[in-house]
Image (cartoon, rainbow, N blue to C red; front, side, top):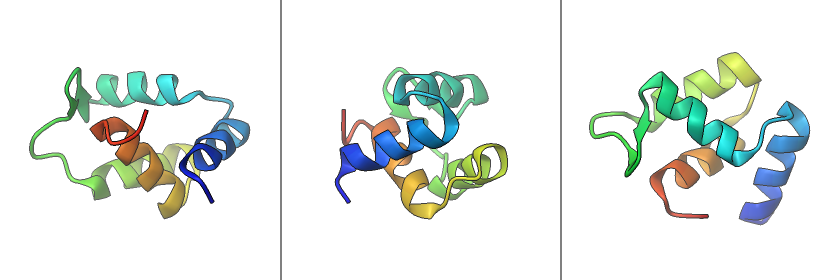
Length: 72
């Protein structure tokens, strides 16, 4: 599955765009304007995404990569 396909599936499942997830991650304190804040572990973000949106590891890691700025 391509990176974009992961993002498309996430939006279809949750109704939230990648930009909305970035904004929520900033509100939760996981991210800032530069990406994932120092000291924040991917597992913390994955736990949030699983608990609040029922997203699995693959979809969660796609969002983590997006938050880190590895993908646009």
